[in-house]
Image (cartoon, helix red, strand yellow):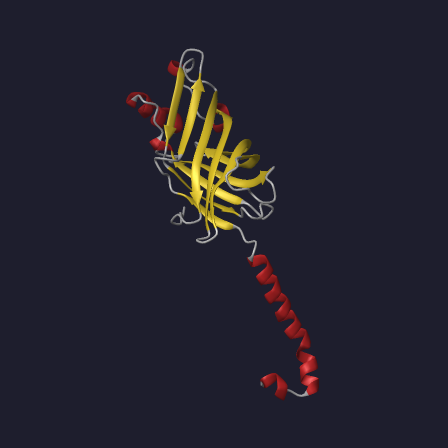
Length: 221
């Protein structure tokens, strides 16, 4: 009613404003269809784990933790959208199966009282199809920043992503992610005392496995 009562000249003056508002509305509607979803990792003892291996000449050491928390911004229907994420592990929860060795690892190597977290910040994913198929593992490559012992380094690692559940009725999506990479202790300033020099390898192999869902409770850091 208001527009019909406006003088003709006034309507001409307002046309650019109306066009701008209409364009913004269309842009928001279009981009809203492809916005990345928020996935969260809750650290389940059944599905989530971080394993590490030290294969030294005198001893093979393997450890793990299931204390993973994280979040991902990802759109399975349009993987060309921006991707980001952050994972955090409590360093003091890493276990090797020998309590005294775990204590030495916390106090003499990782210094968990000063550096309580091991973290990874995802910056990009390469090699995914434009749309992630349901139920099929897809190999890709991830890039990001890995932090341990207070030092951050850029890493690139092979990764496998599976859309294990896609329910259109509830809009629930569940991702399974596996990745593995290696780090050098010297790169992160992690010491190897003389008593363990031949028992602790310079290169540590790390394997990560977790389930992320857009229906899990939000995780904040």
